Length: 95
Image 1: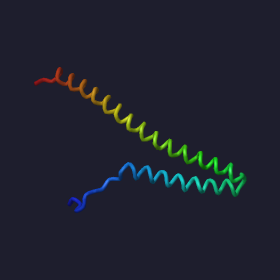
Image 2: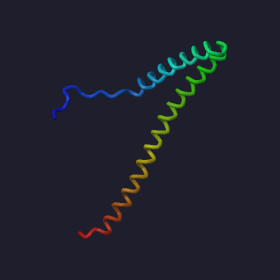
Image 3: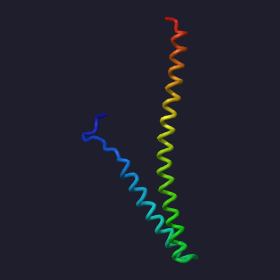
Image 4: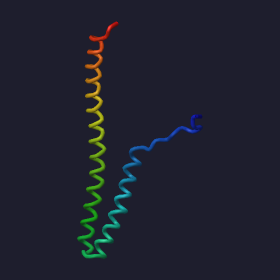
């Protein structure tokens, strides 16, 4: 199998945040329209949809932070377990 001619480009975290923000603005606008047309006043619908957008963007940002922290903790725990396994392997090796 041949390697690709062009290097693989990774997405930057900034574009990911902007995509999330644009998506939540679109969904928030749709939520505003649905709520306004169905039952609520324009001001109430605007407050609910704005709150929805803020919660989604904040949750996605916090989720990235939590994922990074969990990756750091997992790396530390596995490093300690690997050191313990190497210690016991050195003790019980026959050579």
